[in-house]
Every structure is written in structure tokens, then in C-alpha cells.
Image 1: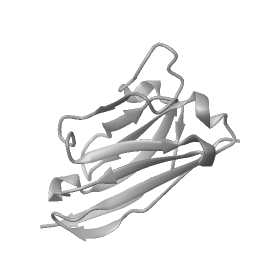
Image 2: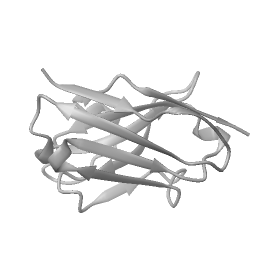
Image 3: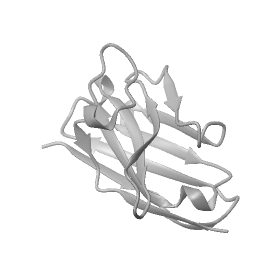
Image 4: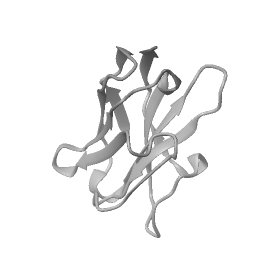
Length: 125
């Protein structure tokens, strides 16, 4: 059974940093692209970032480009999201997810097969 477990969320001030982690089990982690999504209250879940299975390619939503960095450690079955210069609009539940993407990076939420339970990030201005 596949499990994705996020951690690292919390409450911070605007301008602060947080590092989210997501550890996977029950799947061959090194062959799955991994993404981060977020959902703010009253809004739809949205794409944040994705990293290819090898870690060589990544993509970001325009709203986080230059502030967030996605990375992975395949030896530890873990994907990270380093979030710097946080803004109040970054407040959301953050989810990691896995997608099989042999043809390249995928942003579409519908394509992701495995999901974590989410971790809350709250940024106060």
C-alpha cells in the first residue's frame, strides 16, 4: 500500500521560510515524478511544483517561481519543498503527490495517482 506522509508545515510570519518534506513508502520512488500542490480555504487545489523522477527537471507555478525550490533524495524516498520569502497568500494545506510521467513533466492534478494527507502552512502578515 502506497503512503505519502508530509511534514514540516507550521505557522510563520511573512518573509520567513519553511521546508516541507514528503516521505513515500510502498512504491518504487525513484521512477515516479513528485509534485506539490496546495489548497487554500474556499479555493481549488492548485499546482505548486514538480520534480522529475531523477531530480534533473523541475517546474513551478508562476506564483512561487524564484521563492520555492523542489528537490528530492531518492535514497531516502523523500521529496522536499523549500519555501522562502513566504507571503500570506501562500497560506494553504500543502499536499505531495506522485505521477507516472515517462514523457515529461506533468502539472495536471488529474494525472497524479498517489496523494499525501496534507500539511498546513499558515503565513501571517
